[in-house]
Image (cartoon, rainbow over all chains, first blue to last red; front, side, top):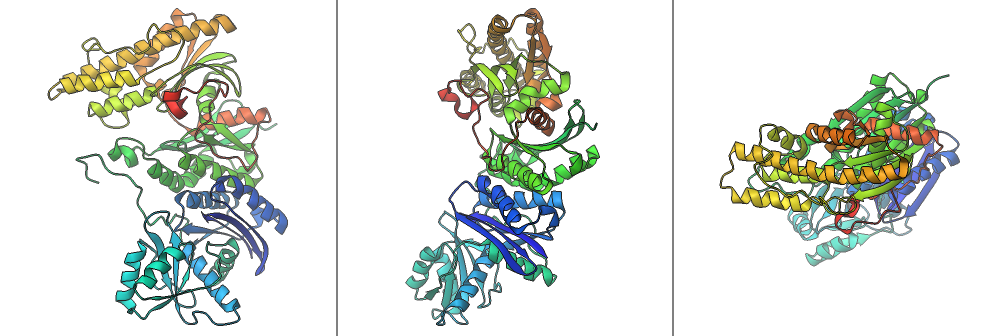
Length: 238
Length: 353
């Protein structure tokens, strides 16, 4: 099974190719802007290195969000354009789920145990007051839906749902803001050295496992978690 | 020998569009989805709403255009998309989709300047030869250009503040006529008396070919505020007076442009009007008359090819492709992309110039 996976949802751009259950190519670079410039050449390079063309693909995996609105559209427009022209289906995955998976992998790789059995709290910077959050169990299975919430509200809701004795394994590029809010209310936070943005290699593996098991990915639509910032003129109702 | 076909994608404002055209000037398919309903409540185009809609709609529209044209990827010679100028969120969606198609099919990618799409439409519809004088009038632009060839433009004049389509939109808003303003003002003006309100005709008599519409917009606002509870007659008269003032200003500026153009290229060349505002029947008739008076052949594409569409992008893409002007896959979508890079930036007009 040949899978092309890519992510442009945050301050990085990564592309991976998996073939017959093995990660063949993994390209990545950190960048705050310019995803629209680098993604297509990276995909071409990855396919070239893997030694096959887009027409040979069985699956296109892409992160659908939450994340940078522009970044999500860059990734999804590319995935949808590829799917349109080569016929391969798209497997959409949540950025939060990919990052939570990265936390599990990172924890398993550690010699000593960190956050064993502990709930994973995946948090992504929205560049605004709130953060994108989702809770996962210790094996990265989602426990609730992704949401946009301020770190202090998140802390309060965690205290009310699981009590002040809760322990969380934090991962994502908003760990600093969230750790501060959680410790302020007495919750315990642990960190693992996992990639803080969704990586195409993890995404490709996730898509392969899901697709092979007959699990449908998320639809190829952005998960914005926020309506466009616009107000109706006075006197108008939506 | 099979004829060359190009797929064109347009997503730079509030129209999502895809089309297939041939080198022998046939439009095999031209699918346009106008997002008017999405933006209407806000009285103008909301960039984030537009970007979201482009992504949801575009692949389906391309599929439809390909089906209507009865072509397959292997029948195409290139894939073209608007690379700018325009609302960057939408431009990115079109460019990335086109790049992805290029990767999947091996077709060359052509990044088209949206303004060049408008500028070359007359060659698709009327087979106009270079050089010609172009008045480009839309919601985002108002320019007079000498068109010497593909990618070769000399700007004679530009708006120094608002675009003419913007003035229509704002006038429509002031008159409570809704969005989009161009067709609304034109419709209201049908019943109105253009001589009732004395509005300024901006720039008339001034040297050069530049345009200005912000003063006219202010005059409309002041006139509206002086009328207590404008009746439908007042609205119609003001719409007609506004349109009349715009026509007067355009006539004066174009007359000067025509003289400059004739000095450089001789008499009898075509005068082409393009862009969304060129769909206005009153302005078309007026400019056609001026054109005749000045001994130029008047060319205006049919209204559906004046407003944003994919056929103009496919055609401009085809013209560029024929000249070997394809683009690399690292092309950066750009919000500002002047047709004449040597022209001075008009400070008040920002990206519009």
